[in-house]
Amino acid sequence: MLLKLFLFFLKIGFISFGGGYAVIPMIQHQMSSQSWLTDSEFQEIVTLASMGPGSIATNSATLIGFHIAGIPGAIASTAGIIIPSLIIIVLIAAFFYKFHNNQWVKASFYGLRPIIVALIAYAAIHLGLQSGKAFAPSWATIMTFVICGASAFALIKYKVHPFTVIVAAGIAGIILF
Image (tube, rainbow, N blue to C red; front, side, top):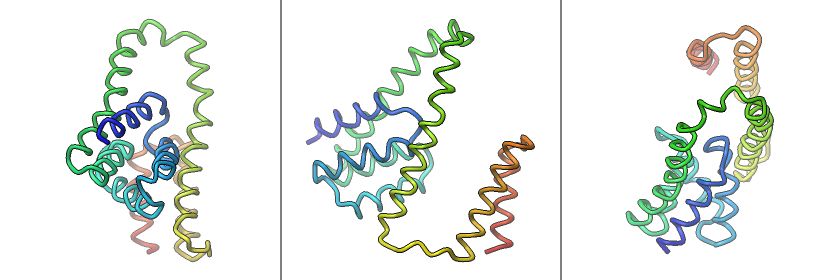
């Protein structure tokens, strides 16, 4: 089981791009296809993983490994998901400076942005729908979307520093909720 966990998260680490939320659907598919976790167990793990510091993918791998095989499972899963990043970052650091102004490289990164946004949106919607509760807009939901929209507008249109937007959104949340 430890080898299976390590190899699965090693594969996820090598094929994932776009951050932790982008890999959540891939991890969930494997967890349900292997019957390692139920959907509700997976949702609980993702919720816990998002509350801790660090990458949600790494935190999820650690919690999944611990759930399946205890501390050795947590170590195997965590090692599996971080080793690819370590290898890739070392290789990129060695060669990126030489190619960072290349038009093909720039175009590739710009082309990946919409895919990453779609994967993150899919993960948010999919996990939200799994709660089993019907979506009924409430004051809190509407105001959350207003704060989100205003934050995106300030970041994109006026190039406000992200720290300022986070503080302002927090203050708005305190006032509104």
